[in-house]
Length: 259
Image 1 (tube, one colour):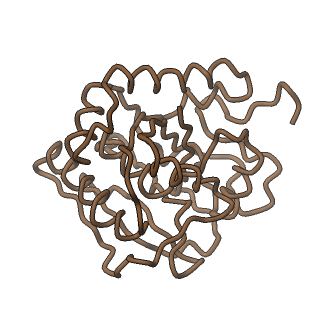
Image 2: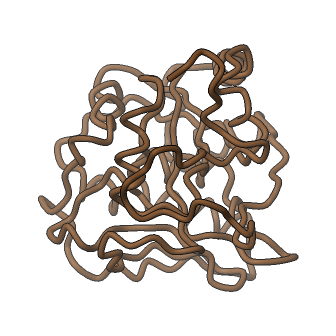
């Protein structure tokens, strides 16, 4: 990469430069995450209340560390445009995770259900995933996501969630992250849930359609299927579906940057 090359376009989408896997080179910008107003107090309190801990960080810490992530990205001409797209801060309290699948379903998805339902009493969160995920999920080795899993065991993490890989296939998302600076990590389960627990209406788009957001770093029993959060009308759902390595206009993957 040359010094001046930008990784993101003026809308915050990650530019699919030199990608050999399936991806939409150009986007119609039809399926979009709506503009979200960031309220650090609300986000902090929702995560603290629904995950049951502030992880030992204060609201001021959370805000300061989150804003430092954005400043750092804005100072670098190759990454500054990601901050022009949708982005939400989150934190995950230190957690002793022994099994990714059972923690995801029994703690993080439940907390997301609580947060969404409290914010939207007339809508519902539906978990369509009927199979037992215990001992069934692992981290995709090329996603860089193991960094997040390892750090949560030792400390409370603060991050920013950027749904910036619009219209990429799974192989293209993995391929793209490998050529981005090391700070960019593909989102998985806990970080995606934490982003939604803090900002439950992240996919509430009233003037058009939002994308489906994949938990890209999670690998289940089949390499051809994966897990995602999707809006269904004004409801929100967690589900698993086949992706078959294809690209689709209404799919997005997310990048996470920790601070």
